[in-house]
Amino acid sequence: MKFVRRLVICAVVFALPGLSAAGVATAATTVPFQINSAPFGNPAGSFDTFAANCVAIVGEQSGVVVVAGGRGSDSSESGRGWGCSVNASVQWINLSTGATGAAQTSDGLRGFPPEATLHTGVGQVALILNAGGIHTPGFATLYVP
Image (cartoon, rainbow, N blue to C red; front, top):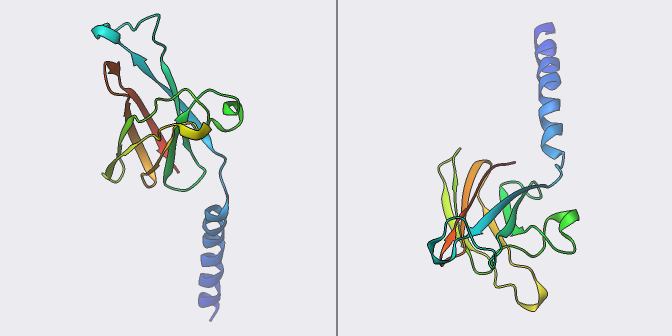
């Protein structure tokens, strides 16, 4: 009987920290990346075409990445603002699970900055954002909690 009691106490001691960690909310993290313009095939870019500043926001929901603009009136607080390309294609791969997917940023109409929500699952994720035309795609790797 003592053995069973000790076994139950040990199980509770080791299980409680794991259960409490699952309920703890993490703060959102922003990972900045750029899409550099290369008009007319110039890989150095151009002074008349500016780079698109994007961010990947992780930690708001488990297994979800939001790709949004990295500048704007509210970008200092949440990372969601203007600066990322409208109607850009986003391709991703979860390196931990092998899952892949694609999405497109929104059109930025009616005052809403363009963004895309990716349901990647938990793990190390690599994403490529391509604005189309003659641009160097933006690339980011990040851990999605």
